[in-house]
Length: 198
Image (cartoon, rainbow, N blue to C red; front, side, top):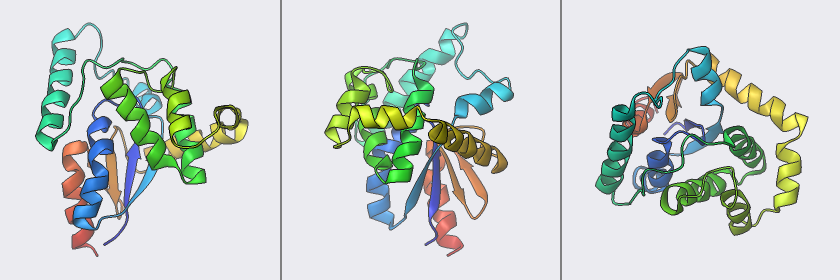
């Protein structure tokens, strides 16, 4: 089966569902994923798209209930509302870019989302970031120095530009052979496509 690119932004609420279940799905199906962080916020700003503005509280309330309901359907929980939007969105995602380069992206993202959606700790901020890095054996000072470097900033911008080139406009998204599948509920469709084109 062809590898599936899993494009995500820490800060996307529905991405919690994919991040939490993707490991089990991979084991069940034999699918493999490459984790690709990017800035969905930058892309959505360019599209003048504000998904859950404060002025649309009914839609915001629906989002939280929908995530809670879907998580229950998958067999795990979500304590909502979680802190949103993230004050340290870009830092959280720059750390993910560094983690992608160094090979600890999955562990970082899973632990970050778990603390965000189960413990109410805002991703990218305190105490989520230092506790997550400690849990996965990464040094906070070293990671922050690198995540705030010009090299990682450039890599973050490059990841976002690549996402745009692929036609990605939201998180989570899955790419198989140039085919885009957007949304947690399209994860299984992406796997079927990967199996079909194997």
